[in-house]
Length: 206
Ligand code: SF4
Image (tube, rainbow, N blue to C red; front, side, top):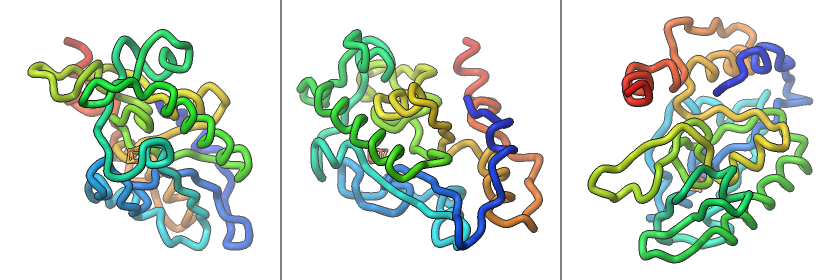
C-alpha cells in the first residue's frame, strides 16, 4: 500500500535536480509487453513523462530475461516475496519455470534503482514482475482467475530494499507527485488509490 507520508515529504525537484523515478518501461511507452505492445495507454502516468522536473529511468524486467515477444507468466503458490525466498514459482503459459530468470531481472532492476539513486518507483500493477498492489494467484487464464493482494517479484525485491512504489492505478498518490513536479498543481482530493476503490474493497472483503 502506498506510503502517503513518504510522498508528501518528497522534495520539490528542479530542472537542475529532477526527481528520479524508476518506471515500468511499458508505462514509459516502450513496446516491451509480451505481445510487443505498451500494454495499453495510462494517461495518469504518461503525465509524468517529458517533464523538466522529473527524470524517468525505465526498465522492463521481463524483456531483460525473456525478450519480446514472449509468453505471459504468473506466480504460482504465493507472491513475489515467496518467489524470492524459493517458496513459490513463476510459471509461463506453457508451463515453463521462469523463476530464475525473473529473480535475475529483479536484481538487475534493483541495481538500476541503486545506481540511479531512485526516489520513487512507478510500476504497472497486476504483472508478475512489476505488480505492487495486486497480482494474480496462479494462472490468469484459469476459468476462475483469482487476484491476490501482493507484489510481483521485481516489486518485492525493490520493496524489500526500501524503495517506495506506486502503481498506475494509484491516482491519489499520483496527484501528490504532480504537485511535487509542479508546485502550482493542487492535488485533486476526489482521486483514489487502487486500494480505496469499490472494486478492490468488494473483491478482497469477500
Ligand atoms: S514486465 Fe513490467 S515493464 Fe515489462 S511489460 Fe510487464 S509490466 Fe511492463
